[in-house]
Image (cartoon, rainbow, N blue to C red; front, top):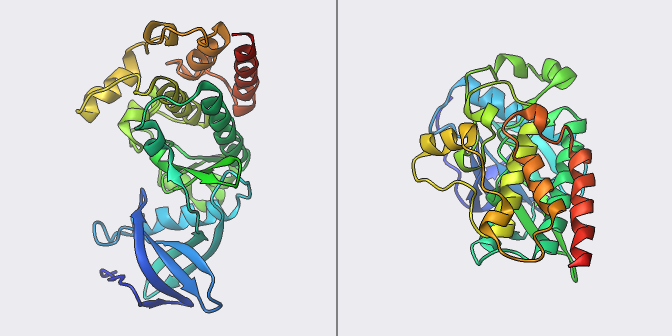
Length: 291
C-alpha cells in the first residue's frame, strides 16, 4: 500500500478534507465535511511511516472498537470506510481544550480535579464494560469541552486500545498484542505496561492516578527526560504522597487513599474497577466539605 497524500480539498469517499487539525497515536487527524455539509474529524493510519498490514489491522481494530462505544465522555465513532486501499475512521468533531493545557497553568482546584477524574472514570468504565482498555490515557488525550456553564471531559484517541475477552477474539486482537510488546506514554505508564506484561482495566486506573496527581500537584509524580528512566520509576519507585508535596488543609486522608489506591505498583493492590475508584473518589470529594 503506497503513501496517500491528504491535502485540503481532496475527496475521500463522501468526505471532503478541510484541514489537518492534529495527530493521534496511530495517525493524522483532519477536519472533513460530508456531502450534507456536516463537519467531522477523520483519522488515518500512519502509512507513511510503516505501510504494513499490521498498521492497517490495528487501525481496523480501533475503528470496530470505537463503534461499539456510546457514552457522553467518549468521542463517538460515526463511520469507517476504505479509500484507495487505505482505512479511515470518521469521528464526531469535538472542540475543547486539552487537559494538559489547563494543567500547564498550574494545579487545578481540587474539587474541579475530582469532577474531571470522575467523568474520565465513567467514560473509561463504559469502555471496560465493552472489553476495551485505552492504555494511553494522558492529559493530551482528554479534551475539556465548554458546555455553557459547566465542563465535560471527552476521551479521545483509542488508537492504542487493547481488546480483551470476547471482543479480542472477535477482532483478532490476540494476534496483534502480545506480552513483551510495550505501547503507551512513559510518563503515564503502569508498572505492568512498562514491564511488557499483560494489562487490563487496572492499567487505565493507574494512568488516571498519574493524571489526578498531576491535576492536584501541577506536576507528574516522576519527572525525567529519558523514557526508559521514567518507565523504571513507574515500575519500581514508590510515588510521593500528596501530603509530602502539598501542605494544604484540603489534602485529606480520603484524598491520599484515593491517589495511593490508583498508583499501587501491584495491580492486585490497585482499585479493581472504575466503580471502586469512583466510590473512593466520592468519599474524597465529600471530605473536602469538612476543610
